[in-house]
Length: 540
Ligand SMILES: NC(=O)c1ccc[n+]([C@@H]2O[C@H](COP(=O)([O-])OP(=O)(O)OC[C@H]3O[C@@H](n4cnc5c(N)ncnc54)[C@H](O)[C@@H]3O)[C@@H](O)[C@H]2O)c1
Ligand SMILES: [Zn+2]
Image (cartoon, rainbow, N blue to C red):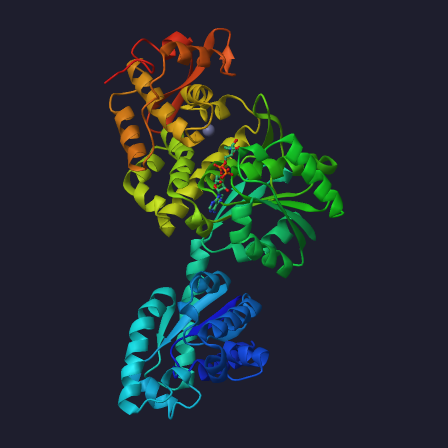
């Protein structure tokens, strides 16, 4: 057991007795949050309730939890702690929650006269039983949902402690199974991608090991920093890394030389040297920006990606492409700078809006279309479960996506044919983005439209069997993604295609799908890509 063991349950469930016994047997500290609160307040829990009311007790309790979270201790929590907003996530993030479950009769028998138990004060025996049932009704379901359950009605303290240890062993095993690893093989610049659920608190040790850094600058955006910054920083501190958070404004506009210049100043203010790591905590914008900073500051410092969007996990954080934009175009100034580690905590995606999740999956679905028919079929089976972030399907598709990207990167680190097929769906997507000015659609949404279009063209040119485009379209629609090109004049599309940067003479390199799982580069003129009846004229 590496992290905190949180014991929850009603008064009388034996949290203290069992907790102390576990502490002895594991050689760990036992902490009772009520006792911590009483220490701080200088009076008993009952007195705090009576004098100041429950809200002020809860505030003290929250502070006590913050103080011990992540310590390798056995911590008994007050009966109502877990019912507080945000508590479950906080507790689960720093350890394992075990619910000591007992029947109301067992609880009352153990409590005795209930002195010092404010929630039962002033009641007779029947009243206490009724109150206990009511409290259980309010809390038991939540306990059982958020924790691993150990029944305590039968057996002595040692028997209960045995059961808790059994449950902890299972939990550790599950955790181990849940964590996925993908290696990006690039000789002495090889690195690991780790994918798991609620693993942010373990990032520090992995960052320390992979980067060798003792100091780090964490680059993030306000929303992400507020939600996840403190946990990452606590984890870094726990691993002996001193860190500083640098927050940039949200959005693509932060991928600019002006912001990079400010970040250089922040690095200097922090006395950063060549051993100072840059950690990107956020989506693809933060990854590209922080990566560019890491690639160029002092000719390169260690870089770590902690992606928090589906897009960054599935795509942007792997491969070492880093860049900022110029006023005249995206990603015009950049470098290849591989990270030392990519740490993906899928739990951070829970706060990501569904539209962003779907947007980020598009390039993974694209991997399925161009390289991996089985992955495509997996999406056809499970797209809704992935959007809901169910553990197994989500880890599976992210792992597969990272493997594919790692293979591509390893075989061909710099842009060439293999990387080229990753541009499937992008010819039209870029045209749409140019025409709509990047505002109305997210990139993945434009690519979704472009993929369906490219598949339809592949069918029409006799390169793909009929039906491929329909399957791609219906999958994307299930994810809530757009698949119809905006109704703009064909002339406008043609002009946009001609300025596409992949233009070769008049020919445009167009990625065609041959079957689900296989793609090919063909050279076509813009007019062949966009025959009459294509986007710009109504088709149905
Ligand atoms: N380097 C590459 O290989 C590569 C590949 C693809 C895309 N990109 C780049 O990635 C960028 C787009 O990345 P993106 O789609 O992640 O955009 P983003 O970084 O702007 O994130 C999208 C939005 O989600 C918010 N957000 C991030 N994490 C969140 C979380 N866990 N909970 C709630 N909100 C969260 C962000 O604040 C932002 O508003 C573009 O700049 C693109 O050029 C790079
Ligand atoms: Zn793309």
